[in-house]
Image (cartoon, rainbow, N blue to C red; front, top):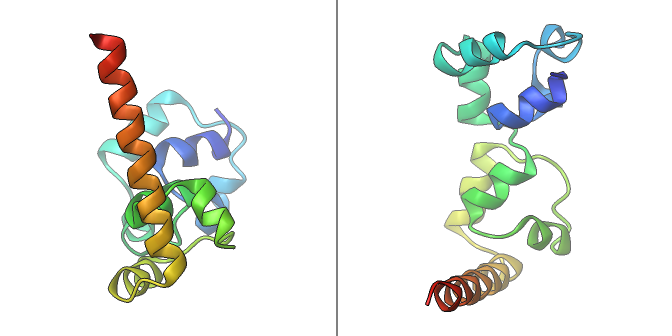
Length: 116
């Protein structure tokens, strides 16, 4: 698989990875499995401190990726930046969390109705 796909599966921001990872032609499934089970130091640091891809940022802030885009958050954020936002949430974050919670509740209700 391409490095971009592997980075997505690892939940990391590709531009923040070492050049050797980004420039790898193909990453095999066994190499990916090794990275997951026995991550090198750079991967451990990257997962802990970031910068993180939008999917991870959105998850940690409990908003949607679209919510990040609406707020103008287009760049990867570090763990420290995410924590700062969580400690003192700006108005957009409060609003997007409310929107995200409503959408999730609606989806759960729809799933429950489909089940019944």
